[in-house]
Structures are given as structure tokens and as C-alpha cells.
Amino acid sequence: MTKNIMIVGVGGQGSLLASKLLGHLLLTEGYDVKVSEVHGMSQRGGSVVTYVRFGERVYSPIIDLGEADFIVSFEKLEAARYVGYLKSSGRIVVNTQEIDPMPVITGAAEYPENLLEKMQALGIAVDALDCLSLAEQAGSSKAVNLVLLGRLSGYFDIPEEKWLKAIEECVPEKFVELNKKAFALGRK
Image (cartoon, rainbow, N blue to C red; front, side, top):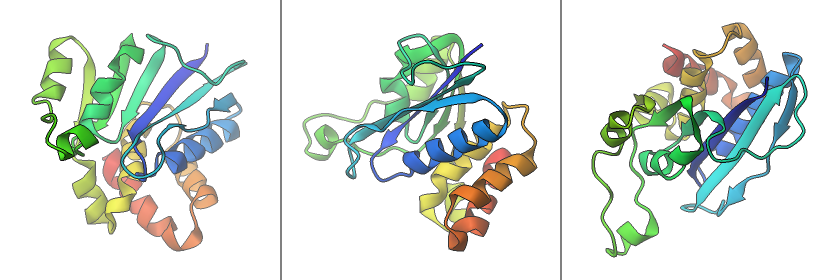
């Protein structure tokens, strides 16, 4: 049975490291893993999507509409943008941060209100967390990705020490302790 995780966010938020770390962990757990390349505008501010698919045998890295078991979102609007990819039994793990897209910055549009409440009203399982505050508590606003992975890890039957080992193997040495701390804060 193949499991599908979409990681969605805004360029420059660390979604690439998150997908690399997740793929590495799942490989060490013995799964066949396909991680897609980044789709979207990866320069700062553009919407970015990566797919992580794993199971006994995975043939394609692409996740279609209605196939995602998890959507891990760095930002509320990105969660709403990709909600159609979620399975009816799926879950969105989302950072409550709001990052204004270009139309909002230029004044051509307003940031939509009550996005999480609207998704929950549709019966979507939303696990929302202020990842930015926790990342700052860990020592850097750039650690939102590891707070999100910490939160996601609670839905997997993989021991915490294996996640921590994956952090050690995927993160530059000088940032390992900071990232482990961010992961732990998200996992709580």
C-alpha cells in the first residue's frame, strides 16, 4: 500500500530539506521511496510543492487529486490551495503562519479569512500549529520545516530516535542541534 505525502509551501522555507529528510528516513525504514523534484517557483515567495511517495513498490513520484494521505503545509493559504489533493481520510498538518502572496502584497487581493475553520467545516482533519513561534523558540525562524516534521512524526510508527538519526545525516553539522530541538518542539 503506497502512502502519499505532499509538502507545500513558499519558496525559501525549507521544503526541500523536509522532503529530502523524509525520503532518507523512509528509505532507511526499508520502503521504496520516490521524492519528486520541486514544482513551482522556488525563488522566495512562489508556491512550491514536493511529493514523497513510499510503500513496498512505488512506480511514480506524482500524487494526483484525492490521493494524498498527508499534506504538510508551511502556510495556511498553501494548505487551502492544495486541499483537493487530500484523500477523504487524509490529514493536513499546517503551520498557522500567513505569508502574503503577491496579489495581497500589491493590494489586488486580500488574504482569505478563516481558512482553517473553513477546511474543518468541510470535514477535513486539520492539525494546525504555530510552527514559527516554536522554530524561534528552538533558535531560528528557519526551522519551521523541522517543527512541521516533528508534528508529522507523531502520525508514523517510526521511533523518534530514527527521525533524530535522519536529522543528523541530512542537516549540516552546525545546525543539527537546533533542528533536533525544533523537531522535538513540533513532536510534543
